[in-house]
Amino acid sequence: MSSVQLAGKRISAGERLFLVVLYICFAIFTFLCVYPFYYLIINSISANDVSARGDVIFYPIGIHFKNFTDMTHITGLGQSAIISVARTVLGTIGTLIGSSFLGFMFTQEKLWARKFWYRFTVATMYFSAGLIPWYLTMMNLKLTNNFLAYVLPAIVQPFNIILIKTYIENTPIALQEAAEIDGAGILRIYAQVVLPISMPILATVAIFAAVGQWNSFQDTLMLMTNQDLYTLQYTLYQYINQASSLAKLIQSTGGTINESVISAATQQTPTSVRMTVSVVVVLPILLVYPIFQRFFVKGIMIGSVKG
Amino acid sequence: MSLKQSALPQRRPRINARKLQGYQMFLLIFPFMLLVFLFSYYPLHGWIYAFYDYRPPFKLTDCEFVGFEWFISMFSNASKRKQIWEVLCNTFVMSGLGILTSWLPMAFAILLSEIKNQPFKKAVQTLTTLPNFISWVLVYSLAFSLFSSSGMVNNLCIRLGLYDSPVLYLQMEDNVWLTMWLWGTWKGTGWSAIMYIAAITGIDQELYEAAYVDGAGRFRVMWHITVPGLLPTYFVLLLMNVANFLNNGVDQYYVFQNAFNKSKIQVLDLFVYNLGLGSGSYSLATAISIMKSIVSLTLLFTVNGLSKVLRGESII
Image (cartoon, rainbow over all chains, first blue to last red; front, side, top):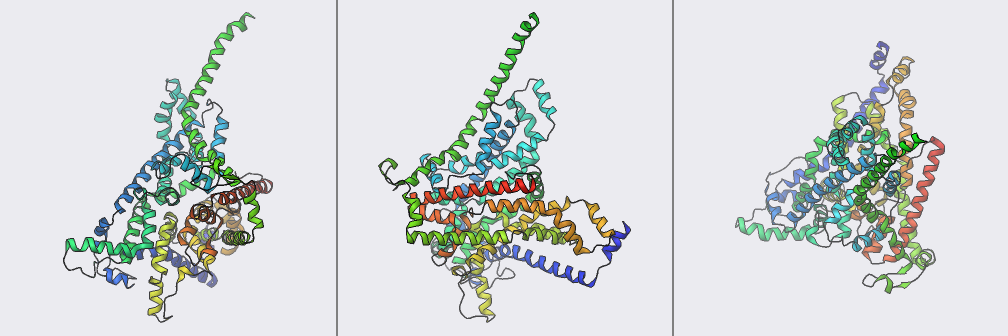
């Protein structure tokens, strides 16, 4: 052991250089990963005339929060936020129920044709009919311009089912047997025995499902033409492309009501609208990030133990 | 004889009860199986559209049956052939770049494990995974803020006198393959590295100690112990990458596409989207989808067979 420590302490000049370069490289890459977010945030709270000129680079200048209150004047933004939150909550609940119930049922030997149905479900991970057939199907099922299109497809997710099934298989079967002897039915065993002991894996699944729902863009793009069903992601995409017209809209509504003289620092510009909406979209992720980063390694480890 | 007879009436009902319970349990999962069928198997019937000249307002039965015409036109029609060739080129280059650099997260993890300053290590590990959790729309928003004509990079460069008029980075056609790869790498490297970081902690510590006792230096230990320890994980992920060669997804390329870079950014998935939902050529788009699905499935099984031969273990 002492020789190991000795070897560790004897650092040659080459190694020292290597370490210095390593620290610098990691610092640069980390900076590149974080700075864009920082840039968005400082710009969204800086004086709008300064941020539009591109002068806000290192720290906020002329801090104000009027941009965020002005966002309420954009018609459709509130509705998108509601849709985004609703699909995230309901979609995640759907994924949790579907994955945990099927994961549990696929461990039950008694289930009729268990192997077949398990394969029937898991096989869907490896093929897809393609974009257009999928779109036409959704149209046939009346799921275009329908909020259910966000939730229903989320319920059965083979990968999560495998995760949870593997987890349940590794918990002591005696717990289920004891409950069965006590006369508990299958649903009771699921709800009162299996669900409580599966909480760690359910938390992991919930977090990744929620992030997936919040970030989802493609389904809105393809299925929704009704503006009331747009998600924040889709609305943001539209705003990036038409921020200038929006800025004018806010100037004409927000400015005249509150104050007669519109100050240049708080007058909306295309830049300020784009930045502020982006911050609104990214903020939930940044806020829950400290909580869910401790699930990362756990989630990945479970996945890699058994496929 | 009498013993058997008395045993039978006892056993029969028990088996039946068990079977009955099995059916009852199936009834519970039936609604879920219906969803699986509706969203994954039922869409396959849409492949039939590839054999018709489908035009949306009309019903399929009112449209002309054209057989394999769409499939043939992909190869016989010169302008279509050129376009598909272009799209395939984009797909191959972008997926190829991803596969060629798929060792980056592993290198990232190995090098990060060399850093002994725990707070620094933890900060790097945490902060570099952040981009993985934002959508491509938001990535585009960040890109727009930094690289558009009035973006930060142009502002800074003009102010520093590097050039006079703004460079339209987002409209550039020539290096779009590279920039798409860069954004993908920026978004994914930190996250993918976590898997290898977890794998590194699983390597037997005694191997390291033994190597140090034998006088191996830092680099030899990395090369002869850490790298071989991670290769199995790398191999599986590489095979998955190969199996997904044609599945680039739509989001990234859709948000970054514009009139100027379209010919270089259209990967197969985006092309199918643009063709089908953009310009209404449902039938041709479906035909291309079918070809893609067949190639993808073949790739998957080939790769799986390869894995069975080389590792004695399948990946699916």
